[in-house]
Amino acid sequence: MEAQQHDAFANVLAQLTELQAVLKVEENAFTLLQEPKRVVRVAIPVKMDNGAVKVFIGYRSQFNDALGPFKGGIRFHPDVNESEVKALSAWMTWKTALLGLPLGGGKGGIIVDTKTLSAGELERLSRGYIRALYKNFGPEIDVPAPDVYTTPQIMAWMLDEYEVIVGRHQPGTITGKPLTVGGSAGRGPATGRGGALIMKLAAEKMNLPVGSSVAIQGFGNVGAEFALAAIAFGFKIVAVSDSHDAIYNPAGFDVPALMKYKHDTGGVKNFPGSTVCADVLAVEADVLIPAALENSITAQNFGIIKAKLIVEMANGPITPEADKLLADKVIVPDILANAAGVLVSYLEQVQNASNYYWPEEEVVAKMNLLMTDAFNTAWSKMEELKSSFRLAGQAVAVQRVVEAMKARGWC
Image 1: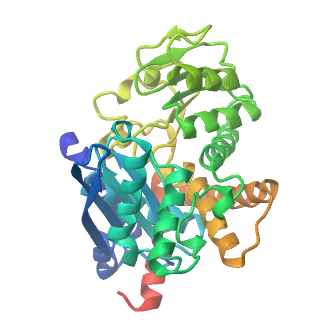
Image 2 (image 1 turned 180 degrees about the vertical axis):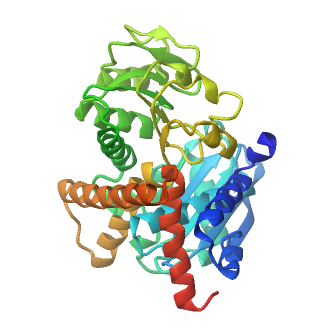
């Protein structure tokens, strides 16, 4: 059973089945929730630096737009596949709904190892993705954003290609852009900052002490920004891992120094004062932050986790079977924990539409208010249903999507 659940979209369907037992959504509406509205697969020819043409496969899944235009990132990764983008577009649908945003859910990606591309090849690939899919995008249709191994620079190339094709400026078509082309202050660190705020709110509900210890699986941009915000809230980062190594220091890391060390050396290995850690999941810590990729925690390794609180900064890091086996933990689901990225992307869209841009403090204040409201709504639903936090958050989101579908006459 667990092998099948490593299929990302199978995870979505398993979660929906569990949710349906509680919500008892009308059958027609439940049927609509089980498939994306549209999935597009494209072949993208790119002229490489050596003159050869290489074809890359790209995807865009548009899951549900009952609440508003599709919204979701584009990832560049060797493991991108149709099931993954379908799953991520579903989770994005629940995420925007839980936040109360007038947006639906989408997700895209290209099968590629960006480390093998030159800057020129990466730009041509990024522009090629837009040429293949531009009819599917627009501020009132579908709004992409950065994701795994995509950057503000890639978003700028994509926006430029889109605007060249349509013949007009339309900055709200893509978010996560550089500030110089209509990006929002505070967008880069938003996901990490918002997740740390959610961890603080959950820790307060659980009466975890000030200075609680935190272990972070995945010390990329999100994990590092999360760590910075967490220490500002008084937490102690005792373990981190990157794609190659894991390190531990029970006294807590100097996070800015660790970030600089990783930038300078390319990894966390041998950071001064640290010891090698076999598996960051097994560290003695109050809080665990899975901030890597999907299916990191399974029925095979869940037993090593000692943390009382798990905050999912990655998308789908816990398989459904493992989720049930971790019932003694409080798990803040990804659709809430890492939602600040799409929230600030929405604020970027609002600024693009008005052609008026807020200072970072104002963006952060709006983000904190909406994230806190979403947390409190989901926590209250959890207490009402006497359920897991994940099921409660999804219940709030799915109910909102279903209400919008009914109002539109879809079901």
